[in-house]
Amino acid sequence: MDDIDPLWRPAGALTALPEDEPIGIELPDADDRPVKIALVRRGAAVYAVHDRCPHRGAPFSELGLIDDDGTLLCGWHYWGFDLDSGRHTQVEGIRVCTFPTRVVDGAVEVDVARPPHRSPPLVTLD
Ligand code: FES
Image (tube, rainbow, N blue to C red):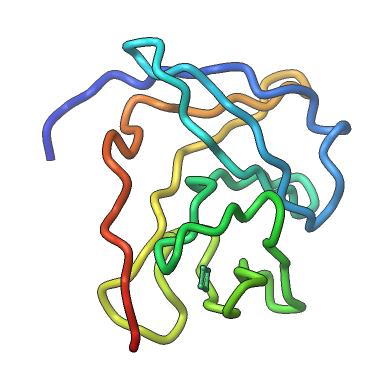
């Protein structure tokens, strides 16, 4: 993997994020292009994924759910994704782009150094 310096962007206060509810934000990438991100807080941890389901493009910030196991579910057709890796929970090779996060003095930051410059190919099942 090539070395790219992190590009931390402020994403609000940790306490402003509801528990287990995907929240949509837009952060500028290195070229000032907006990157749509869904943030999910689970306790003191914050996860960031591309706000676009790789199936048919539904925004997780509007249709996403977190199940009891902490899996991100797309509410359109209920595909599930691991919040850490972005991997589909059942189908090998399908994943959503994830972004590193950190919390500094109660403020959430997201590293957008590796944004999904192009949307991942949508998967058609039928
Ligand atoms: S659009 Fe997300 S599961 Fe179909």
